[in-house]
Structure formats: C-alpha cells, structure tokens
Image (cartoon, rainbow, N blue to C red):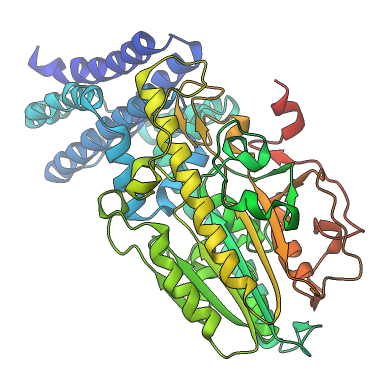
Length: 531
C-alpha cells in the first residue's frame, strides 16, 4: 500500500475533480480528456525527474511538483464549478496582468463555503507529502535501455497528441512557457517600433492649435448598455444623463473586443487591434497626444496595473499627470468614483491650452454593493429576470445601483466641462460589459464564459456649441463598431493629424468602413449574437 501511495493520491485528485465537476454541472468528454491531460503531464514530469542522480534533488523536485499539480487541478476545478469554464489562454493572460486588489476582490466575491470545502478535500493529502514523495522514489519509473531515446519519444508523442487536440491550451505550465516565449518574440518588434516613434518629433500635430482644447474621455468599468435607461432598459439607471439626452450622440451598436479590462483597453488605447494584436504595446494614445502638444492626464480609481510592461501600464505611464485613487484593496475600502471629481477640477483648472483627461472609473465592477454610497441604494424591489433566486435579485439591484451612480458621476463631469470656454468634448464608453442574470445564470465577465451582455457597451459623445469637429464628421448612431479601433476615433475627433491615424477605422468619419467584428477565437459577433 505504501509503495503505491502516489498512485492512490493522484487518482484521488483526478477522480475528485471529475466527480465534482460532473455533480455540480455535468459530465463531459472534454472534461475527461482534461483529466487525461493532467495525468500524462504529471507522468512526464515524474519520469524526467526520476532520471536525475541526486536523491536530495529528486526529493525536493517531487515535493514541488506534487504541490504545483494539486494547485493546478484545484484551480481548474474551482473555475469550472463557479463559471463552467475551461481555464484557457484568455483567463491566464487576464490573471497575470490583473492587479493584486482586483485579484483579492475576485477571491472575496466568488470564494465561499462550497469552495473552501472543495479546497479542503484537495489539500488534505498534502499532510502525507513526505510519504507520497517516498513512494514515488521507490517506484520503478526508469527506462533501463535507451532511456533517453524512449523518454524523448514518450514526451514527443504526448505533445503531438495534445497539441493537435488543443487540450494542451488548458495546461497551465504550457500556458506560462508559451506566454514567456511569445512575449520575448514580440518585444523586439515593439522596441524597434517605439524607438522610431520616440525619435519622430513630427509624429502628430494638432490641427486646432489656434484655439484652446479640453477633451475628457471617461472610461466606465463593467457597464453593459443593456442595463442603461439610455439604451431602453426598463429601470431609471440614467436619470442624470437622460436630462441631457438631446445633446448626446448615443451610438447603439458598439461592442468591446474582449470581456476583460486588460485585453479591451490594451486594444482600445493603442494601435493594437484584432488584425495586428502585437501593436497593443505600440504608440499609446497618451503618447500620441503628448507628441501633438497636449498635456495628458490619467485619473483612475484603480491601482496601477500589476505588470509595468503591460499595454495598459504603458498607456497610463505616458500621461504627464497621473493619479491612482485606489492604493489598497478596493473591495473593503469603498473608494467611490466621486472621490475623483476633485482631481478632475484640478485638471480643468490647469492653465495649459490643450488638455486631454482620461478618467478611469471603477464603475460597476464587482463587488457591486461597494460601488455606490448609501443614498444611491435606489433599487430594492424584485427585478425582472428569468432566474428566480434571491441572490440574482440582490446582484441585479446592486448592479443597477452602481450603474445609476456611474450615471451621476459622468453627468457631474459633463456639467463641469460645460462651463469651460474651450473647444470641448466628452466621450464615455465602458471597457467591457457584464452579465448579471440576464441571459445566463451568473454574474461577471469572464471571457471563457461569454454572453452578448459582456460585450455590448455604451458609447456616447457630447461636444460643445461651436465644436471644431473634423470636416468628414458624421453621426450614424447605428454603426456597428468595436472599440479595438477606438485609438483612431479619439485621434480623429480630437483634430489630430498623423500618418498612423486611419479614418476608415473612426466611427466619426464619413470614410468609415464596416469590418467584421471578430471576438473570442475568430468568432463573428453577429453570428455569436444570434446563437
């Protein structure tokens, strides 16, 4: 029994994962193949380590591998139990680029008693970690003849089978290795591109330099247009902006390219888009405005991005004036977006003639109940939803209250801007949408569990009387647009001139060209919408 302990423990973990997923959701062939992938991956690592000569080194590595394997299987199980998703590349990239505060909030929001019990079931065997390692060391894993040839063939067979079935895309160690390699390959291209931009003093110019300019771009968080009164929602979630409706250009068919802040804003605020994803690290919108003679402001109710080399970090870091309100975990610190209004006043009072202010709200990001002060706790009745559950009612009410508070904040900023005697506009959009018990029985915005509501977002433009809009400006409220081209739209409406600006990608231009809105893995959004 003792010499086979490792077999019992690994079998326990794999069977536990499959049973829990099947009991709480359903048994599937794919999940079974995922179990096989975990088994084969672990077997390969064990075979390789067992050919080392040093017993102490093997013991240390086996301890490490066992701990990593159980963490990997446990994490897959937790993600599937909560969201019915197969943890894949999209989830991984979001995980490594989120900040600690949002990660802490995610754990707080979605880890409850069920998840703690599951965690206990997985990690109890680690109390016998030494005995498990000893049983592996005693097992006859070595190839005695042509060992390296056989080992190499075994590894190659595994990689070939699982690469062509795409199951390897859900292997965490593979994702980490692949991400590091791709990041290294892309970095040289971006460094060369950005060095050319830095040396180019005539990269862009302001065609309206003869007047003072004040532009504000408000970036909402997790706000779907399907919960907005301005877009036909049955509740009064936009009572403040509704008063200015006649002066607002409200675009009705705009989506985000992704359902995470990191992915969506990386494309929206850089040259990167679906066709050229590598360029998310190229020419942040703040750099373009700096080169055009503007003073750039970044005012945020988020913490700085966790990865300083990420696309979103590059955007905010290039702003000449930066303020991040949330320096600690936002889930308990109740840092409402209203705290940013004073910083907006400071930016508006700055004497520089040409200014663009990027205001990044916390908006309706979960935990929804922490996103608004008590006086905005307006919706407390039973909401309309096909999912008759008290938790669903609670989350919908909290979410709608958060959307209403965001409406208040955006309107406050708008009223401040209206007092400016400059060439001015305010643009409002959300980084991505949110599913809140509308089409599916869950809330959130995970890309591996998408719905149309996680992509559909508000997109609104206000400009003052006498605004110097481009000669080719048109307002077509029904244009189908995806914000991976937003960089071009912002530059175009702001009166900038640059070889990098493509008006065919600007929602405000008469030369705008419709393009297929591709989301997920080469999925046409129009087809996805009707499925």
